[in-house]
Length: 308
Image (tube, rainbow, N blue to C red; front, side, top):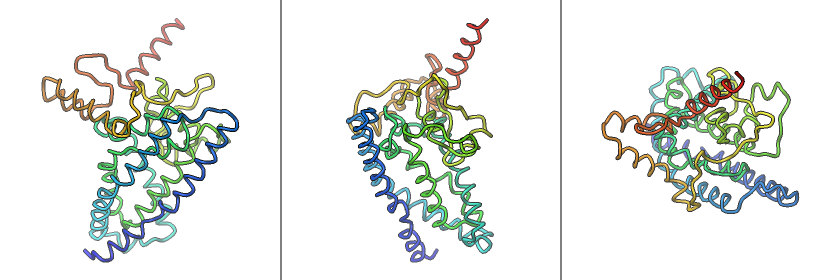
């Protein structure tokens, strides 16, 4: 491995830092508008917790990102396609689609595997939907996130291309964390992830739980059965199905890891211990099954029964 070339590429992966002033500028404008219009889009303790999560991620992300950058760089060196894919326009276009496809499955796994959910849940613990929530990234998920992108360098995409496209995808997702943008034209709502779709994703309503995992293209949710549209008359209720009561940054970042460890310890057999780790949040070996699909099915059955 050419370590000098790798480190040069790693230092060149700075696109996200150029986005930071835009993020905070948009946050300041949204906050000012909310104050002047008395919209109550922000809650002080909730916003502070979100900003603390952004700080935590900035530090926690350094080592996993460097480690996986090295791995992806080496995998690209082994790729038989590395001389075919060389940052041509079509390669960037193809990478955009593959990166977004990868993001969809990573994000969906964060909601359907409890160990991954423990690292992602801090993003969903915000009780308001605003641009501060967009900065409230999952801290623990930095450890496992990048492994989902490992197939891409084997297809010929170099490490800097992969990480640049990940930053572009993240940049797009920032603006959809808002209540100030209503429904967009139908064609855009059909293809792209929008504020309306992402409000559903952050909602704790049973009908909305664990839906709309898209990054940029909502078509993945439509194709793989995880799409739900925002409904008239059913406003999203943000936060968790059981909200945490602490706003301490450490508690926000780690509370689900502690809950997971508690459940693993109290399970009596190894099969149940592993189920707590790898099944979706809400599974229990000795209590009610409160996984989102189970809750949604019960609600649908109850609604059907009431009609009859």
